[in-house]
Image 1: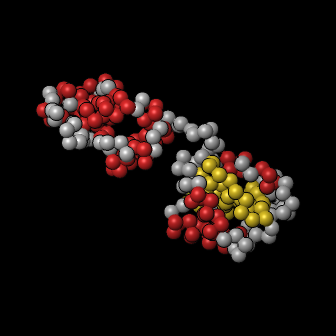
Image 2 (image 1 turned 45 degrees about the vertical axis):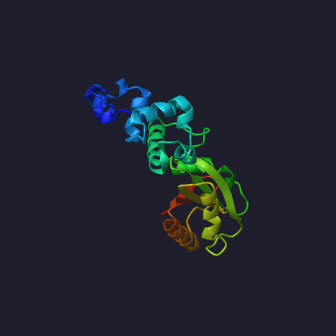
Image 3 (image 1 turned 45 degrees about the horizontal axis):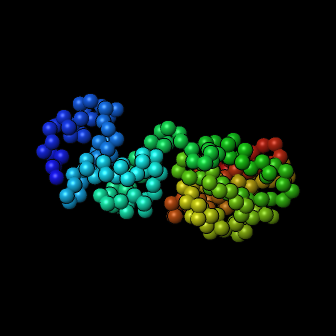
Length: 218
């Protein structure tokens, strides 16, 4: 085995990238830069080449943490670095998983809550979003008079944990047609936001919806 340092500088992946640009590196050379180091008996270029021989590019990019960490030459640290690089690339290219709806505004959220406009009873619904603001789950938490006692944070965040949500949007309707928030609405929002901050799941907003309008609780 020859060490990367023993290769001519123009053949070392980092030097080659600096001199010629990343577009002029082969796939295993780019992977070698991300890996950083090799293993006993193999330098990083050999490790990278072996990985890509075993896993075609598309399959490799689709591996999860457990699958990556099991590959000889990777391990937990390098698996995390690779997943972070994969995810940044997907976000930059605006790649969406399974055509999930993206929620970037209150209007987008309300579009997923149209049934609340005509509901005769008060419904409390939560939208669960991943780190790309894609809707991964939607759940009705309660039906009936809304107050801080009937809607408990554990009922809100249990589905968030199950679906690996990064954030949530709260919503409920006012069958009366008014969208002004009550004292109970403000108290409930405060209570759920506080719980979310403790467990690391952001409450983005709480929306009150009526038959023809909506309002965000600040």
